[in-house]
Length: 107
Image 1 (tube, one colour):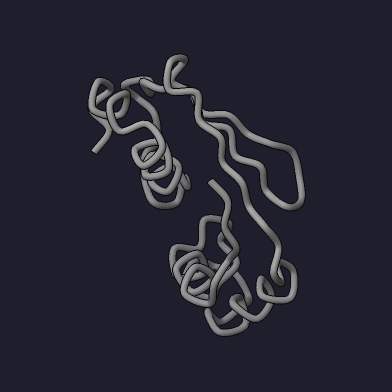
Image 2 (cartoon, rainbow, N blue to C red):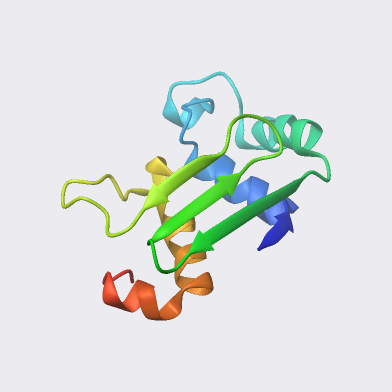
């Protein structure tokens, strides 16, 4: 699956603020300034996720930085909070591998 970051995506990210950049979470940026920062960085960059349903893996390829891979099922103590960034990855795996996601109880 591929996609580009939209204004709504940037707003959700900045409101969730996993990096603690906004005033709400101890940083210096307003949510509006955070959105502007990431709009400038992300521009129209393309993001890509690839799943291997048999192996239970999802690889995420950001436009900058190294790819990351998540293996399912997650450990019982895995951080699935919004701040961890895991909910979007779980949703991507569920979309790409619905039968495997059901086996791993990904909701």
